[in-house]
Amino acid sequence: MRPASVRNTELLLAHGLRGPRELALRAAAAGLAACDPQLAVERLVSLDGDDLVIDGSRYPLKPGGRVVVLGSGKASLKIGIGLERVLGDRLSGGTIVVRHCDGGSELKRIELAEASHPIPDERSAERAQQLLDQATELGPDDLLIACFTGGSSALTSLPPEGVSAEDKRELHRVMLGSGLPINDVNAVRKQVSAFKGGRLALAAAPATVINLTVSDAAGDVLDVITDPSVPNGTTVADALAILRGHGLWDAIPESVRAHLSAAPAENPDLSGVDLHTTLIVTGETACDAMRAEAVEAGAEAVVLSTGLEEEAGPVGRILAGLARESAAKGRPFPSPSVLVGCGGESTVKLGPGDEFGQGGPNQEAALAAATALDGAPVAVVFLDTDGSDGGTDLAGAVADGATASRAREAGIDLRAAVASHRSGEAIARLGDGIDTGPTHTNVNDLFVLAIGATD
Image 1 (cartoon, rainbow, N blue to C red):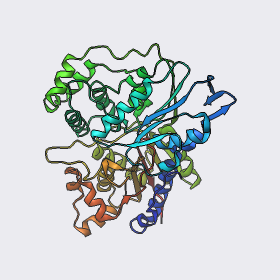
Image 2 (cartoon, one colour; image 1 turned 90 degrees about the vertical axis):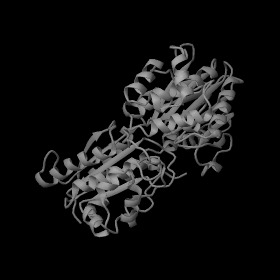
Image 3 (tube, rainbow, N blue to C red; image 1 turned 135 degrees about the vertical axis):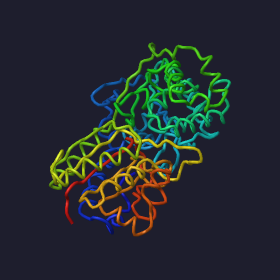
Image 4 (cartoon, helix red, strand yellow; image 1 turned 30 degrees about the vertical axis):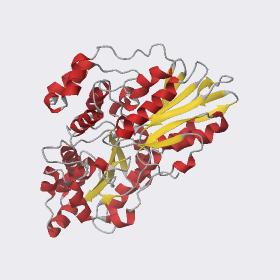
Protein backbone atom coordinates (compact mmCIF):
# COMPACT_ATOMS: atom_id res chain seq x y z
CA MET A 1 0.00 0.00 0.00
CA ARG A 2 1.24 3.47 -0.85
CA PRO A 3 1.71 6.19 1.78
CA ALA A 4 -1.37 8.36 2.25
CA SER A 5 -1.69 11.58 0.28
CA VAL A 6 -4.11 14.45 -0.41
CA ARG A 7 -6.05 13.24 -3.43
CA ASN A 8 -7.76 16.51 -4.43
CA THR A 9 -4.89 18.99 -4.23
CA GLU A 10 -5.57 20.60 -7.61
CA LEU A 11 -9.21 21.21 -6.74
CA LEU A 12 -8.17 22.87 -3.49
CA LEU A 13 -5.74 25.11 -5.38
CA ALA A 14 -8.31 26.18 -7.97
CA HIS A 15 -9.65 28.97 -5.72
CA GLY A 16 -8.55 31.10 -2.82
CA LEU A 17 -4.96 32.25 -2.21
CA ARG A 18 -2.96 29.78 -4.27
CA GLY A 19 0.49 30.61 -2.89
CA PRO A 20 -0.26 30.13 0.81
CA ARG A 21 -2.56 27.20 0.06
CA GLU A 22 0.07 25.42 -1.98
CA LEU A 23 2.68 25.81 0.75
CA ALA A 24 0.32 24.70 3.53
CA LEU A 25 -0.89 21.66 1.60
CA ARG A 26 2.65 20.73 0.61
CA ALA A 27 3.78 20.69 4.24
CA ALA A 28 0.67 18.82 5.40
CA ALA A 29 1.12 16.17 2.72
CA ALA A 30 4.72 15.61 3.84
CA GLY A 31 3.59 15.15 7.43
CA LEU A 32 0.87 12.73 6.42
CA ALA A 33 3.23 10.62 4.31
CA ALA A 34 5.78 10.46 7.14
CA CYS A 35 3.17 8.86 9.41
CA ASP A 36 3.01 5.69 7.30
CA PRO A 37 3.29 2.76 9.76
CA GLN A 38 4.22 0.17 7.16
CA LEU A 39 7.32 2.11 6.18
CA ALA A 40 8.14 2.56 9.87
CA VAL A 41 7.90 -1.20 10.50
CA GLU A 42 10.10 -1.99 7.51
CA ARG A 43 12.64 0.56 8.79
CA LEU A 44 12.68 -0.49 12.45
CA VAL A 45 11.98 -4.25 12.41
CA SER A 46 14.21 -7.01 11.04
CA LEU A 47 15.23 -10.64 11.47
CA ASP A 48 18.80 -11.53 12.40
CA GLY A 49 19.06 -15.30 12.48
CA ASP A 50 16.76 -16.43 15.27
CA ASP A 51 16.43 -12.95 16.73
CA LEU A 52 13.66 -10.48 16.08
CA VAL A 53 15.25 -7.00 16.14
CA ILE A 54 13.04 -3.99 16.86
CA ASP A 55 14.68 -0.57 16.93
CA GLY A 56 17.93 -2.16 18.19
CA SER A 57 16.35 -4.43 20.83
CA ARG A 58 16.63 -8.19 20.34
CA TYR A 59 13.95 -10.78 21.08
CA PRO A 60 14.95 -14.46 20.63
CA LEU A 61 12.51 -16.57 18.64
CA LYS A 62 12.38 -19.80 20.62
CA PRO A 63 12.38 -23.22 18.89
CA GLY A 64 8.81 -24.36 18.43
CA GLY A 65 7.48 -20.99 19.55
CA ARG A 66 4.94 -19.05 17.54
CA VAL A 67 4.93 -15.39 16.51
CA VAL A 68 1.33 -14.11 16.49
CA VAL A 69 0.02 -10.66 15.62
CA LEU A 70 -3.13 -9.35 17.33
CA GLY A 71 -4.42 -5.82 17.00
CA SER A 72 -7.09 -3.35 16.03
CA GLY A 73 -7.24 0.28 15.01
CA LYS A 74 -6.75 2.72 12.20
CA ALA A 75 -3.02 2.10 11.74
CA SER A 76 -2.97 -1.62 12.51
CA LEU A 77 -3.44 -2.94 8.96
CA LYS A 78 -0.27 -1.31 7.68
CA ILE A 79 1.67 -2.51 10.73
CA GLY A 80 0.49 -6.01 9.88
CA ILE A 81 1.49 -5.69 6.22
CA GLY A 82 4.94 -4.50 7.25
CA LEU A 83 5.35 -7.38 9.71
CA GLU A 84 4.38 -9.96 7.09
CA ARG A 85 6.96 -8.54 4.70
CA VAL A 86 9.70 -8.56 7.33
CA LEU A 87 8.93 -11.86 9.11
CA GLY A 88 7.72 -13.98 6.20
CA ASP A 89 7.13 -17.59 7.23
CA ARG A 90 8.38 -16.92 10.77
CA LEU A 91 4.99 -15.34 11.36
CA SER A 92 2.42 -17.90 12.52
CA GLY A 93 -0.74 -15.80 12.04
CA GLY A 94 -3.09 -13.66 14.05
CA THR A 95 -5.99 -11.25 13.62
CA ILE A 96 -6.31 -7.50 13.03
CA VAL A 97 -9.62 -5.63 13.31
CA VAL A 98 -10.25 -2.57 11.15
CA ARG A 99 -13.12 -0.37 9.99
CA HIS A 100 -12.56 -1.06 6.29
CA CYS A 101 -10.81 -4.09 4.79
CA ASP A 102 -9.61 -2.13 1.75
CA GLY A 103 -6.03 -3.19 1.07
CA GLY A 104 -6.37 -6.31 3.18
CA SER A 105 -5.59 -8.53 0.20
CA GLU A 106 -1.92 -7.86 0.91
CA LEU A 107 -2.19 -9.90 4.11
CA LYS A 108 -1.53 -13.61 3.66
CA ARG A 109 -0.97 -14.92 7.20
CA ILE A 110 -2.92 -12.48 9.37
CA GLU A 111 -6.71 -12.58 9.30
CA LEU A 112 -8.44 -9.24 8.74
CA ALA A 113 -11.83 -8.57 10.34
CA GLU A 114 -14.19 -5.59 10.32
CA ALA A 115 -16.11 -3.79 13.06
CA SER A 116 -17.61 -0.34 13.58
CA HIS A 117 -15.99 3.00 14.37
CA PRO A 118 -16.39 5.51 16.05
CA ILE A 119 -19.37 3.85 17.77
CA PRO A 120 -18.98 0.09 18.42
CA ASP A 121 -21.46 -2.43 17.03
CA GLU A 122 -22.25 -6.07 17.70
CA ARG A 123 -19.17 -7.13 15.73
CA SER A 124 -16.94 -5.10 18.04
CA ALA A 125 -17.68 -7.39 20.99
CA GLU A 126 -17.23 -10.50 18.84
CA ARG A 127 -13.85 -9.30 17.59
CA ALA A 128 -12.62 -8.41 21.07
CA GLN A 129 -13.59 -11.84 22.37
CA GLN A 130 -11.87 -13.44 19.36
CA LEU A 131 -8.61 -11.64 20.16
CA LEU A 132 -8.85 -12.57 23.85
CA ASP A 133 -9.38 -16.22 22.93
CA GLN A 134 -6.35 -16.21 20.64
CA ALA A 135 -4.21 -14.54 23.32
CA THR A 136 -5.26 -17.13 25.88
CA GLU A 137 -3.95 -19.92 23.62
CA LEU A 138 -0.37 -18.59 23.72
CA GLY A 139 2.32 -20.33 25.74
CA PRO A 140 5.69 -19.44 27.33
CA ASP A 141 7.66 -19.99 24.09
CA ASP A 142 5.34 -17.81 22.02
CA LEU A 143 5.70 -14.15 21.13
CA LEU A 144 2.73 -11.84 20.71
CA ILE A 145 3.15 -8.69 18.65
CA ALA A 146 0.29 -6.41 19.70
CA CYS A 147 -0.57 -3.58 17.32
CA PHE A 148 -3.40 -1.62 18.91
CA THR A 149 -3.71 1.90 17.54
CA GLY A 150 -6.22 4.75 17.57
CA GLY A 151 -9.76 3.50 17.05
CA SER A 152 -9.31 0.20 18.88
CA SER A 153 -11.70 1.29 21.65
CA ALA A 154 -14.65 1.04 19.25
CA LEU A 155 -13.41 -1.71 16.96
CA THR A 156 -12.75 -4.11 19.84
CA SER A 157 -15.28 -3.19 22.51
CA LEU A 158 -16.28 -5.88 24.98
CA PRO A 159 -18.68 -4.84 27.76
CA PRO A 160 -18.08 -6.21 31.25
CA GLU A 161 -20.56 -8.48 32.97
CA GLY A 162 -23.78 -6.65 33.77
CA VAL A 163 -23.45 -4.05 31.00
CA SER A 164 -25.25 -4.65 27.71
CA ALA A 165 -23.71 -3.98 24.32
CA GLU A 166 -26.22 -1.18 23.71
CA ASP A 167 -25.40 0.46 27.04
CA LYS A 168 -21.70 0.24 26.17
CA ARG A 169 -22.44 1.93 22.84
CA GLU A 170 -24.38 4.66 24.62
CA LEU A 171 -21.40 5.29 26.91
CA HIS A 172 -19.25 5.79 23.82
CA ARG A 173 -21.77 8.21 22.35
CA VAL A 174 -21.90 10.27 25.53
CA MET A 175 -18.13 10.38 25.96
CA LEU A 176 -17.36 11.20 22.32
CA GLY A 177 -19.92 14.01 22.30
CA SER A 178 -18.75 15.46 25.61
CA GLY A 179 -15.84 17.51 24.27
CA LEU A 180 -13.48 15.92 26.82
CA PRO A 181 -9.83 15.20 25.96
CA ILE A 182 -9.28 11.66 24.71
CA ASN A 183 -7.24 10.81 27.82
CA ASP A 184 -10.31 11.44 29.99
CA VAL A 185 -12.59 9.59 27.58
CA ASN A 186 -10.33 6.55 27.71
CA ALA A 187 -9.98 6.70 31.49
CA VAL A 188 -13.71 6.05 31.68
CA ARG A 189 -13.96 3.51 28.86
CA LYS A 190 -11.13 1.39 30.29
CA GLN A 191 -13.10 0.87 33.51
CA VAL A 192 -16.17 -0.30 31.59
CA SER A 193 -14.52 -3.06 29.59
CA ALA A 194 -13.60 -6.72 29.66
CA PHE A 195 -10.87 -6.08 27.07
CA LYS A 196 -9.20 -2.73 27.65
CA GLY A 197 -6.97 -1.66 30.52
CA GLY A 198 -4.31 -4.36 30.01
CA ARG A 199 -6.70 -7.32 29.91
CA LEU A 200 -5.42 -8.56 26.53
CA ALA A 201 -1.81 -8.62 27.79
CA LEU A 202 -2.91 -10.48 30.93
CA ALA A 203 -4.67 -13.08 28.78
CA ALA A 204 -1.50 -13.57 26.71
CA ALA A 205 0.75 -14.40 29.68
CA PRO A 206 3.11 -16.27 29.91
CA ALA A 207 3.92 -15.33 26.30
CA THR A 208 6.24 -12.39 25.58
CA VAL A 209 4.22 -9.34 24.53
CA ILE A 210 5.71 -6.71 22.22
CA ASN A 211 3.66 -3.61 21.45
CA LEU A 212 4.26 -1.93 18.10
CA THR A 213 2.04 1.11 17.88
CA VAL A 214 1.44 4.58 16.49
CA SER A 215 0.86 7.37 18.97
CA ASP A 216 -2.42 9.23 18.66
CA ALA A 217 -2.28 10.78 22.13
CA ALA A 218 -0.84 14.00 23.46
CA GLY A 219 2.27 13.18 25.44
CA ASP A 220 2.46 9.66 23.96
CA VAL A 221 0.74 8.14 27.01
CA LEU A 222 0.89 4.37 26.48
CA ASP A 223 -2.30 3.39 28.29
CA VAL A 224 -4.22 5.78 26.05
CA ILE A 225 -2.53 4.61 22.84
CA THR A 226 -2.45 0.82 23.25
CA ASP A 227 -4.46 0.25 26.39
CA PRO A 228 -5.50 -3.44 25.92
CA SER A 229 -1.84 -4.45 26.12
CA VAL A 230 -0.17 -2.17 28.70
CA PRO A 231 -0.81 -1.46 32.39
CA ASN A 232 -3.70 0.88 33.15
CA GLY A 233 -2.51 4.10 34.71
CA THR A 234 -5.96 5.31 35.72
CA THR A 235 -8.48 3.97 38.23
CA VAL A 236 -12.19 3.61 38.88
CA ALA A 237 -11.89 6.67 41.12
CA ASP A 238 -10.51 8.64 38.16
CA ALA A 239 -13.42 7.54 35.98
CA LEU A 240 -15.96 8.53 38.62
CA ALA A 241 -14.31 11.92 39.13
CA ILE A 242 -14.36 12.64 35.38
CA LEU A 243 -17.99 11.68 34.94
CA ARG A 244 -19.22 13.54 38.00
CA GLY A 245 -16.92 16.52 37.59
CA HIS A 246 -18.15 17.15 34.05
CA GLY A 247 -21.83 16.55 34.75
CA LEU A 248 -21.99 13.29 32.77
CA TRP A 249 -22.91 10.85 35.54
CA ASP A 250 -26.65 11.07 34.95
CA ALA A 251 -26.20 10.95 31.15
CA ILE A 252 -24.69 7.45 31.10
CA PRO A 253 -26.80 4.26 31.33
CA GLU A 254 -27.84 2.91 34.72
CA SER A 255 -25.97 -0.37 34.15
CA VAL A 256 -22.72 1.55 33.60
CA ARG A 257 -23.26 3.56 36.78
CA ALA A 258 -23.92 0.34 38.69
CA HIS A 259 -20.79 -1.29 37.26
CA LEU A 260 -18.56 1.65 38.17
CA SER A 261 -20.06 1.93 41.63
CA ALA A 262 -19.37 -1.75 42.33
CA ALA A 263 -16.12 -2.15 40.35
CA PRO A 264 -13.00 -3.20 42.30
CA ALA A 265 -10.37 -0.52 42.84
CA GLU A 266 -7.56 -2.68 41.44
CA ASN A 267 -6.55 -2.78 37.78
CA PRO A 268 -5.25 -5.98 36.13
CA ASP A 269 -1.78 -6.79 37.51
CA LEU A 270 0.69 -7.05 34.62
CA SER A 271 3.81 -7.20 36.78
CA GLY A 272 4.40 -10.81 35.75
CA VAL A 273 4.00 -10.21 32.01
CA ASP A 274 7.14 -9.96 29.84
CA LEU A 275 6.04 -6.71 28.20
CA HIS A 276 7.85 -4.36 25.79
CA THR A 277 6.64 -1.35 23.77
CA THR A 278 8.01 0.57 20.79
CA LEU A 279 6.32 3.67 19.37
CA ILE A 280 7.05 3.50 15.65
CA VAL A 281 5.35 6.78 14.65
CA THR A 282 4.49 9.83 16.81
CA GLY A 283 3.47 13.43 16.36
CA GLU A 284 7.16 14.33 16.33
CA THR A 285 7.56 12.18 13.21
CA ALA A 286 5.00 14.25 11.34
CA CYS A 287 6.30 17.58 12.66
CA ASP A 288 9.87 16.80 11.61
CA ALA A 289 8.69 16.01 8.07
CA MET A 290 6.51 19.13 7.81
CA ARG A 291 9.27 21.36 9.13
CA ALA A 292 11.76 19.94 6.64
CA GLU A 293 9.33 20.43 3.74
CA ALA A 294 8.65 24.04 4.71
CA VAL A 295 12.36 24.82 4.95
CA GLU A 296 12.93 23.25 1.53
CA ALA A 297 10.22 25.57 0.19
CA GLY A 298 12.14 28.57 1.52
CA ALA A 299 10.08 29.40 4.60
CA GLU A 300 11.06 29.52 8.24
CA ALA A 301 9.39 26.64 10.08
CA VAL A 302 8.17 26.60 13.67
CA VAL A 303 6.77 23.58 15.52
CA LEU A 304 4.04 24.91 17.80
CA SER A 305 2.75 21.77 19.48
CA THR A 306 2.52 17.99 19.55
CA GLY A 307 -0.19 17.98 22.21
CA LEU A 308 -2.83 20.61 21.47
CA GLU A 309 -6.15 19.36 22.88
CA GLU A 310 -8.88 21.99 23.01
CA GLU A 311 -12.24 22.68 21.40
CA ALA A 312 -11.96 23.09 17.64
CA GLY A 313 -13.43 26.59 17.29
CA PRO A 314 -11.10 28.31 19.77
CA VAL A 315 -8.11 26.38 18.39
CA GLY A 316 -8.82 27.63 14.88
CA ARG A 317 -9.37 31.23 15.93
CA ILE A 318 -6.34 31.44 18.24
CA LEU A 319 -3.90 29.92 15.75
CA ALA A 320 -5.31 32.10 12.97
CA GLY A 321 -4.93 35.17 15.17
CA LEU A 322 -1.23 34.42 15.70
CA ALA A 323 -0.78 33.93 11.97
CA ARG A 324 -2.64 37.13 11.08
CA GLU A 325 -0.53 39.27 13.40
CA SER A 326 2.65 37.63 12.15
CA ALA A 327 1.70 38.42 8.55
CA ALA A 328 0.92 42.05 9.42
CA LYS A 329 3.66 42.88 11.93
CA GLY A 330 6.28 40.15 11.72
CA ARG A 331 5.53 38.99 15.25
CA PRO A 332 5.44 36.64 17.02
CA PHE A 333 6.67 34.82 13.90
CA PRO A 334 8.45 36.15 10.81
CA SER A 335 6.92 36.32 7.37
CA PRO A 336 7.14 34.10 5.40
CA SER A 337 6.93 31.23 7.85
CA VAL A 338 5.10 27.97 8.37
CA LEU A 339 3.66 26.93 11.73
CA VAL A 340 3.06 23.21 12.23
CA GLY A 341 1.80 20.83 14.87
CA CYS A 342 0.64 17.23 15.16
CA GLY A 343 -0.33 14.71 17.79
CA GLY A 344 -3.03 16.54 19.73
CA GLU A 345 -6.74 16.32 19.06
CA SER A 346 -9.31 19.06 18.72
CA THR A 347 -12.69 18.28 20.20
CA VAL A 348 -16.31 19.27 19.58
CA LYS A 349 -18.91 19.36 22.36
CA LEU A 350 -22.19 18.25 20.85
CA GLY A 351 -25.41 19.66 22.23
CA PRO A 352 -29.02 18.41 22.13
CA GLY A 353 -29.97 17.54 18.56
CA ASP A 354 -26.37 17.58 17.29
CA GLU A 355 -25.30 14.48 15.41
CA PHE A 356 -22.07 12.76 14.43
CA GLY A 357 -21.18 13.02 10.77
CA GLN A 358 -22.37 16.61 10.18
CA GLY A 359 -18.79 17.83 10.11
CA GLY A 360 -15.72 17.31 12.23
CA PRO A 361 -13.34 19.15 14.53
CA ASN A 362 -10.80 19.84 11.78
CA GLN A 363 -13.40 21.23 9.40
CA GLU A 364 -14.80 23.30 12.26
CA ALA A 365 -11.33 24.60 13.17
CA ALA A 366 -10.73 25.62 9.55
CA LEU A 367 -14.00 27.58 9.39
CA ALA A 368 -13.26 29.26 12.72
CA ALA A 369 -9.80 30.18 11.43
CA ALA A 370 -11.34 31.66 8.28
CA THR A 371 -13.38 34.11 10.37
CA ALA A 372 -10.16 35.41 11.94
CA LEU A 373 -8.11 35.49 8.71
CA ASP A 374 -10.40 37.67 6.60
CA GLY A 375 -8.09 39.45 4.11
CA ALA A 376 -4.81 38.12 5.55
CA PRO A 377 -2.15 36.45 3.34
CA VAL A 378 -2.39 33.20 5.28
CA ALA A 379 -3.64 29.67 4.57
CA VAL A 380 -4.41 26.99 7.13
CA VAL A 381 -4.80 23.23 6.92
CA PHE A 382 -6.47 21.21 9.66
CA LEU A 383 -6.40 17.47 9.02
CA ASP A 384 -7.16 14.23 10.85
CA THR A 385 -4.38 11.85 9.88
CA ASP A 386 -6.73 8.85 9.80
CA GLY A 387 -8.57 10.39 6.83
CA SER A 388 -11.96 10.64 8.55
CA ASP A 389 -12.68 13.85 10.40
CA GLY A 390 -15.52 13.38 12.87
CA GLY A 391 -16.64 10.19 11.16
CA THR A 392 -17.05 11.91 7.77
CA ASP A 393 -15.48 11.00 4.43
CA LEU A 394 -13.24 14.08 4.57
CA ALA A 395 -9.91 14.26 6.41
CA GLY A 396 -10.29 17.96 7.20
CA ALA A 397 -10.24 21.28 5.40
CA VAL A 398 -8.19 24.18 4.10
CA ALA A 399 -9.02 27.86 4.53
CA ASP A 400 -7.29 31.16 3.86
CA GLY A 401 -7.67 34.93 3.97
CA ALA A 402 -10.11 34.82 1.04
CA THR A 403 -12.43 32.17 2.50
CA ALA A 404 -14.60 34.60 4.47
CA SER A 405 -15.28 36.79 1.42
CA ARG A 406 -16.03 33.71 -0.70
CA ALA A 407 -18.45 32.56 1.99
CA ARG A 408 -20.23 35.92 2.06
CA GLU A 409 -20.65 35.86 -1.72
CA ALA A 410 -22.14 32.35 -1.46
CA GLY A 411 -24.47 33.27 1.40
CA ILE A 412 -22.67 31.01 3.89
CA ASP A 413 -22.65 32.06 7.55
CA LEU A 414 -19.33 30.73 8.84
CA ARG A 415 -19.98 31.64 12.47
CA ALA A 416 -23.34 29.88 12.44
CA ALA A 417 -21.78 26.77 10.92
CA VAL A 418 -19.20 26.68 13.72
CA ALA A 419 -21.72 27.37 16.46
CA SER A 420 -24.10 24.64 15.26
CA HIS A 421 -21.29 22.12 14.72
CA ARG A 422 -22.42 21.60 11.12
CA SER A 423 -19.20 22.48 9.37
CA GLY A 424 -19.59 19.79 6.73
CA GLU A 425 -22.22 21.59 4.64
CA ALA A 426 -20.27 24.87 4.58
CA ILE A 427 -17.01 23.11 3.69
CA ALA A 428 -18.74 21.23 0.88
CA ARG A 429 -20.22 24.42 -0.60
CA LEU A 430 -16.82 26.15 -0.41
CA GLY A 431 -15.07 23.17 -2.02
CA ASP A 432 -12.45 23.18 0.73
CA GLY A 433 -12.70 19.62 2.09
CA ILE A 434 -9.50 17.56 2.08
CA ASP A 435 -9.88 14.07 0.61
CA THR A 436 -7.25 11.46 1.52
CA GLY A 437 -9.43 8.37 1.66
CA PRO A 438 -8.66 5.86 4.42
CA THR A 439 -5.00 6.45 5.31
CA HIS A 440 -4.43 3.42 7.56
CA THR A 441 -2.51 5.57 9.98
CA ASN A 442 -3.47 7.77 12.92
CA VAL A 443 -1.34 10.38 14.66
CA ASN A 444 -4.45 12.36 15.51
CA ASP A 445 -4.73 15.86 14.06
CA LEU A 446 -2.12 17.90 12.26
CA PHE A 447 -2.25 21.57 11.39
CA VAL A 448 -0.25 23.88 9.14
CA LEU A 449 -0.38 27.67 8.84
CA ALA A 450 1.45 29.21 5.90
CA ILE A 451 2.10 32.90 6.59
CA GLY A 452 3.01 35.48 3.99
CA ALA A 453 3.53 33.25 0.96
CA THR A 454 2.45 35.03 -2.21
CA ASP A 455 0.84 33.81 -5.42
